[in-house]
Length: 241
Image 1 (spheres, rainbow, N blue to C red):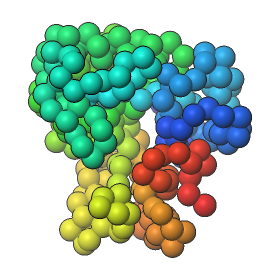
Image 2 (cartoon, rainbow, N blue to C red; image 1 turned 180 degrees about the horizontal axis):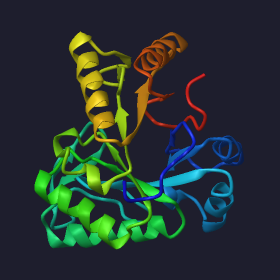
Image 3 (cartoon, rainbow, N blue to C red; image 1 turned 45 degrees about the vertical axis):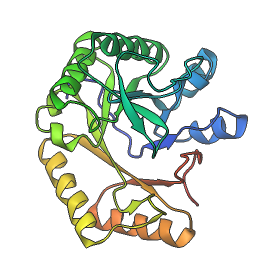
């Protein structure tokens, strides 16, 4: 691992607004992933006093960000819409996308401890690896986490500090539910592979009922990994009760 190692367990993912109640909950978490552009520098500075703060950075898809509305086709690197999340797939080889990614990373890293790299499976693998490599070269000491990105392993491993396995035990589509046996075997396999690479690993699950949340946590306990259970909107700063 080349970035700053994390020594406290637990990773929370919250993409909602930084209201006072949310900030209070986030400040009690070990590590949080947030949409850093929603926060003021002062809010992030206070949060970083007690919490390791990671921003969000998409490498394979574009999305609305600040004043950028992300209208499909409005940028030369747009290739198609991802209707599941309302985002736009990109040509990760395009120089303008590389400049966009590095610019967004600079904005996030000015006030956070690192970033979570998302949509790693959405674009050309070699180009996506190239973007991750450029980030690590420019910011050698920040924390870089990958959301899945399994097809990029093991080449991605030297560039990152850890992996978040999204939808570890549950899926959000077409509705929140436990994975079928093949899906559970798939994530268990990649949990072993990530651990074998010596990377930190956390899980993320979706639930719409306490019962499903309990199932996700029970399965994570069985596999020996911490999971953060939340809604599809990722709007629970402390996770599903």
